[in-house]
Image 1: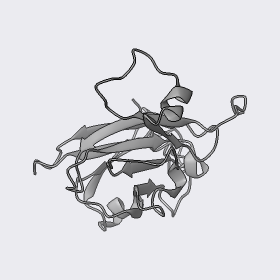
Image 2 (image 1 turned 180 degrees about the vertical axis):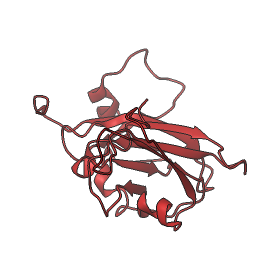
Image 3 (image 1 turned 45 degrees about the vertical axis):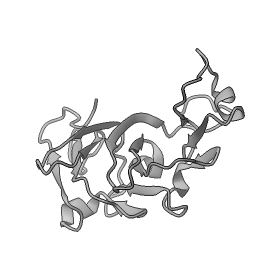
Image 4 (image 1 turned 30 degrees about the vertical axis):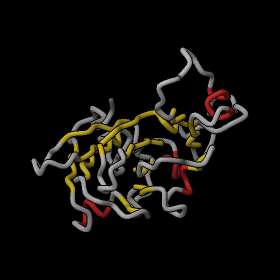
Length: 193
């Protein structure tokens, strides 16, 4: 079952930095004052913003990029969004539209299985390959291959200048996307926080 439906989708608020911020702001005041933007999830129970990350400026435009996990999106395969930094965002950004709106990259589930994996439940930043550019990990703790138990997966996406668009985590497995994959033989839900 799903939690009770609220009036809006889950989402993330981005508060723009300023020297004159008041000591507190409500989410409504953030939008009404023009001090930030709301990144809205695909559906009200999708856990948009359940995990966040800041890998730095991956596309080299001088502005920091950020990651938003939405582990319940895409029929619960999970989606992670790499949002390219900008000096301005619209008041409300639909996460499902960031690729089409050229605001960033949408990393979707493995299209061959479409089993619920909860990818995006955990995100971590590190320079795994030692090249001086941050890489990011995408935890998929509910991934299973139809065998007994929950196995989980961790995808490592090597940092690079991603063009806006859509990518599949399956591209890591096929070698089309630079990265690595960690799997588990047990039932420890690899990829959880």
